[in-house]
Length: 208
Image (cartoon, rainbow, N blue to C red):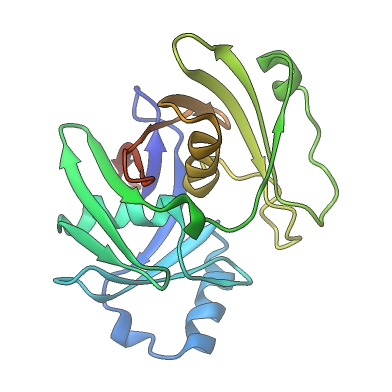
């Protein structure tokens, strides 16, 4: 599927989902399948009724990641997801799939602000070694952000099309709701909650 699609249904970050996680039972086998698929992340569903997930990049197992949870929330239609980091609230609302998560669960990212969207668009892919979320205001009063994400893992994913965890971190840092355009045209919506959690939402489409 593709998660965080734009208003036209295009773009979004490609996500691999193994709906029957028991068919790939070991960590080593799951890591190898995630590597073979080559998506930014692949999620294994270990219990569809409870929403229990196991998440991998091509080289790492993650306790939590944003866009796999948004995709799984859409697919499973359950009120919560169980990740290695904790329980994630989940809901569907019209064309959007939403999760509610703690920004502290997000892996570390370098949030690097630029002066304009033009500067963000012109950035080359940096060398591996640092996970960089480059962003600039498109319209600060309206909360509109232009962003690009560079994982820096040297695993074949030079740029992430849409990155939920980084959006959670940016929302927590700025303390306000955001409408983020990332990559080629993906859209991520966020909203901070009074308890310190952050809602994260977007459109999900099955790959055809």
